[in-house]
Length: 266
Length: 214
Image (cartoon, rainbow over the protein chains, first blue to last red):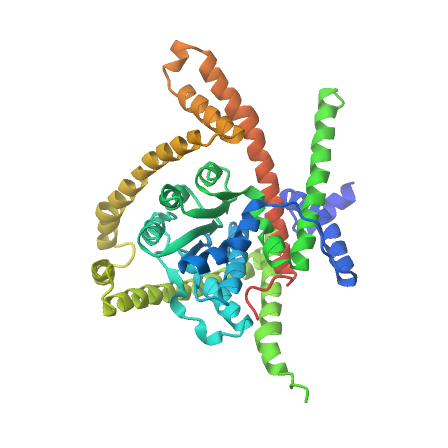
């Protein structure tokens, strides 16, 4: 197809970019089709149970019973850049917890490290109080800025979170977002105190720490399902189903290619 | 009587932020696909604006720290001495760094002789935390934890150089664990993560998710 190749070259789209478009475009078809279907019917899919999300739904009653706050960390990344999706997963979790907490006397204790996440987290809490009809209950210090990352390291933030978990009245610890090795520094003191902990990350090198320290871990892509499981929004359902459709297609392609190469077909 | 719809507020708090977010998001995304110098300049300007906004967010964070610790001092909280230390450190570092800037001698000295040793000491705790975490895992008697612990022990022992002399089987087992089941698992996780990132980005770009507006 030399004409198509020339056209692509003239448009300024490189080979790598063309491959990205080829992989990205098929994602749009089921996504928008399901969105269109959802607008005409009531979409309420049967989701497989994820114990961590089930436990989050019961977490606030534990906080109300004990009168102690739930600590929430939305990760060490910001609301821009490659880890934005992880931060968004943390913010969806915070939105859910803040909504529930707005009806009680025990607000969540939110800590952040990235400056761009700070206003986003504050806004989630403020809007939760507005939605529940208590706008005056929101205070600026309900989201606490610990320390900014220093040369990409979130260790100062981890030190601050350790102090919060060790010295403040906290009944549970929720950590969902983008984390590095500092995850263990924050989660292990809670695990040693047998605090109830729910957390997740997407970075494979951090997942052993998540698995070892969390009462209910969320592993890898499970964190991106927070919106569908907790907020139960149509847009999140459609993207979750689209992910599944695309994943099944990719698995089939991988199996076919492996069989074909094993048989020496190419 | 029907409540009046405030179109001005809807425009200001919903439509304008959504339109700006979608337009800027699409422009920056297209910059990844189009290799054109003029377009690249436009994307650079938008990213620079983003950096400026991030600086204001940092000031907001600093104000939050000052507010929180001042309140603790005023309330004579049990942790008051640490709040005084934090505020005093902030003021001293600010005054020392101000004349020469963030890359000046004072800043470099603070980083090299104060911050980095503190960070290294703190990270050293990871060794003990890994030990206690693995010990706790061994006490939980589920087959997943057993598999986890066996894999960890095989990889740890297999990584010791003299194991090659003791028995070549253990380093070979380590290589197999790292390159076959662990790598397969990591690739599967990364595949799911990539799909999750695309889905989240798509929801934001299409305005289905609007964390920036009412």
